[in-house]
Length: 255
Image (cartoon, rainbow, N blue to C red; front, top):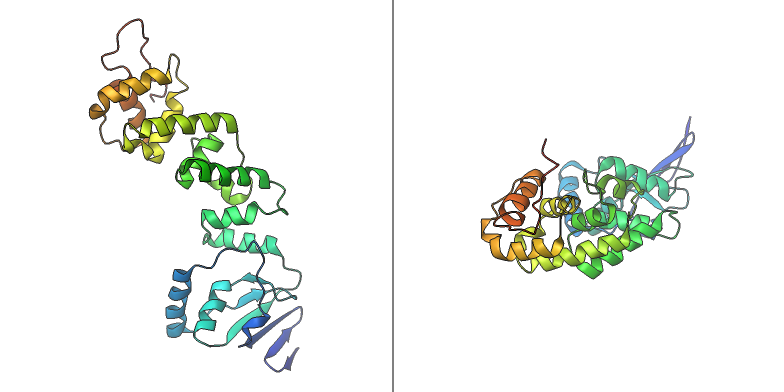
């Protein structure tokens, strides 16, 4: 059984409809920032195929999924097809876009640094850390999480990101900045992850590594992975030409 009233159709517990009144749609404060490129891509696609997926809103007209579709239809002054899902909230926005994998790190940061998210502190620390040090998103995540597997990327996306030791991350950032002043190639994520592992080896001394890098940086090859970076740091930089009383490094990360 369904009832029609104007451009609205009711199916049991939900409603679908079509409208050109774009003003009825509301966005959550922490919803992701609109991407102009994505809007333009959707415009082209929908002009060819039409709007294949309805925008999802809750009973208060807050958009759960489809804000880019709304903006694309608005630009072309075309009607928006929508579906009302009663009781949907900002948590559903996160779940839907998590599955779709269409958010970037800036969107996750905006979503999880909000007051309503109970784990907002690490995200705010991340934002301040990135602003202060200017490294890439991935490097900042790696320094703060000390996660060698995926540099904290999955946790960042899930809302469970944690800062392991802010003081240590700040010190590592300072040291990396000093190394970058010597060799810009060390600004790669794999180079940074290798450096963090290098620091865990017995007998490692940062001051010695820095001075050896100044002398031997031309020996550093193009490295393809973290393991190659570690080997090169040890064999071509740290241990190369090293004399007593300094102690050589032994790579305990060799498979």
